[in-house]
Image 1 (spheres, rainbow, N blue to C red):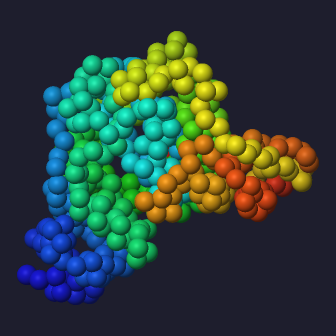
Image 2: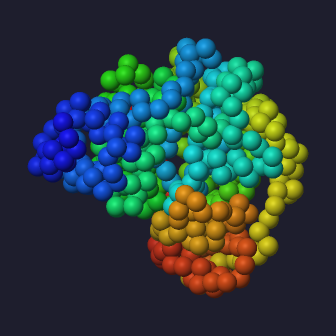
Image 3: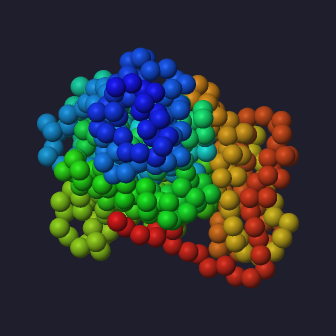
Length: 433
């Protein structure tokens, strides 16, 4: 068996065997297969696809390429949550303490942001002194003691995926359903959860640009997970506009805390409640969805969800006074309003454009090694379906310097499409699979 024959086989559109996939993953992880040959095979996969057996073999090979986390001593039912990415997606910060306060243990490893999609770890590190790099022993101990821990990936989980992901990014092979599905699920299998709810996003601010692609990805991930005798639910949601009102790390922490006090934008509320209900159902709750929604709102209104977030922060070294007094959090030195020059209703708010503007402000990364400014970002005042008058504020840019600020203001104006006729607000969750 050799890599050249494997590349040629996939170039011809033929099915790779489990042994051939294992040979590639093991060889590339050990640096026995060079980047240029791995790139050739990845591009052949991107062009010709993979069937269900190949995707499962690829996923398991990557999951087995490094360490694995065993969470069975925490609970028989550990429910995880994942999103395929989006602009302004602070959902993990909100639903994790809600679900944990309802008695379901949350043990979650999260990543940093790259490109227009923000990372949970970056947001958590916006809370002064919050430690995301605790040991696995402390991670599991925290879950057992307070029912929740959110950390960065501290183990060597699925190292093959890290190498392949970086390679895909450099050769324009990111948008491939077999490669996305195997990437996500290999990390989840290695991370030890046995039940998972995935928010599969589509639209201008997501990897998948239309609903059909999103459903294909969801079904590919479901086949992988079910093949491991695990339970999975996929929520298909639109990401045409940013989620909620804030884009940027400290700004999203502020919005998450406000959400835990019950103040949520309509679209954020829809995603939060749906994801919480689905996680509770996977955890074995037998109540009706309406009863579960009532329980969710109860822990929000009585403060238990927020206090669980405070417990989490304190347990991982953070100064919780910043959560009780959000004005203490650091602010950007320059805040500039973006003013509407039209009357009408917002028909479009392009999430991709907003995400790219946030990167230019310094809130996101173009490369994994980039430093970010957690103070900067965007606060949206108007979203799709909102009425706008000439002279009203559409949004605020939070910046660290005035360079290019006028250009960024114009770019954000161009992300809005304002029309004279009334625009109805649409639900953003399309389907639950």
